[in-house]
Amino acid sequence: MVTVPDASEYAVYFGRYISQVEGNDLFRVLDAEMAKTQSLLAGLSDSQALHRYADGKWSIKEVIGHLIDAERIFAYRALRYARLDKTELHSFEENDFVANARFDSVPLADLLREFALVRQANILFFRQLNDEEWSRTGVANGNRMSVRALAWTIAGHEVHHRRILSERYLR
Image (cartoon, rainbow, N blue to C red):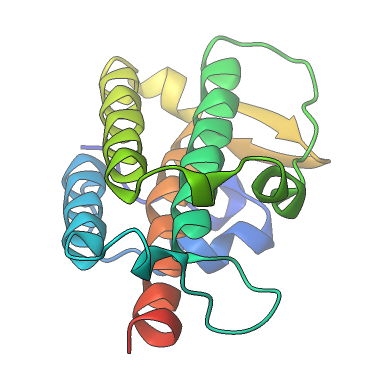
């Protein structure tokens, strides 16, 4: 079982995501959170998924696209750190990623399927790691972080955005 990371394994900023995760079994959490997000959005039409709760905010499709992009980036960092790559990595500008991705033109069903497939691939990768690899660290945007903390950040980042979807988009 991959336990919740200690606060020393990540920058304070990422604690806002990790602290939102309920449970202490990473793989169960990753599966359960994906199921909750898929269930929340499954009944929406493509036109409903274009909804923005305010001017200048992302559409529902863009939120899902952001989750996909962020999960890929966090998993890429975890891969680099697990393989002992010492190269310091850059941050990513989430708003630029969304603005340049054209998520609103992608069917919602395709985005949800892609999100599930990215998660499945990451779970398979994470399941291969041993205890030593989980504790390895690297640096991105000047912040040291463990592989374990990145995996838990993936889960918490999803919880964070699903709450926003529930509270601001789908109320």
